Length: 231
Image 1 (cartoon, rainbow, N blue to C red):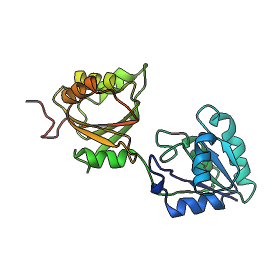
Image 2: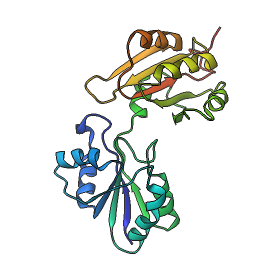
Image 3: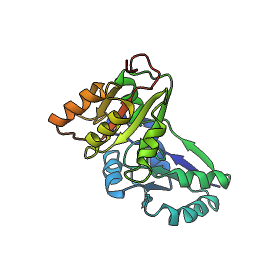
Image 4: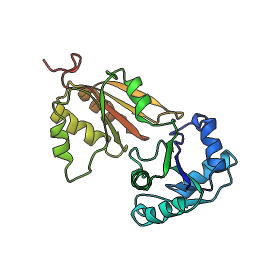
């Protein structure tokens, strides 16, 4: 029986790619990529010449069965990557990992790049306990999710696109309180990486006058943290 390797890829700087990740990709029988065009640049940079196939949120329900069967019925070692970061963390991959586990296929997830860990640390908000919420629903269920987090005592982590940052921060302010401590970290591990710390109201003011650009991680202090409580 083959094996599934879950391989993190850099969220920014290509130097963040580990030596082991490069070796695993080179030794794989084939690579499953979220976007073969994006991953093709990575593969070319590290001179990795292995067949690639698309595996993304729009086709994974249809292709997962065939992939699992190929791994199970052969000695194929398959590597799963996403456009950036660790597959299955706000990226495709969970379905394949789950099905491989059900079939008794060995799974190895390599340690490596993911956006929320450096964002959490650089936010300077409490990091010993936190909740990762990823991307919020854009419409249905969004308000309910946020209302359920109103009294969450742990630091909260969200992913957001630059086009919705201001809207999301405004919603946070309305539900969590405008003086709740927060940080907006963008373009992690890239040339223009930046961390803006303050309160939700100050972040709203900042991005009202400064157009949000790049991919964002929003960190919000928990409700019972002494530095985030409203008087």
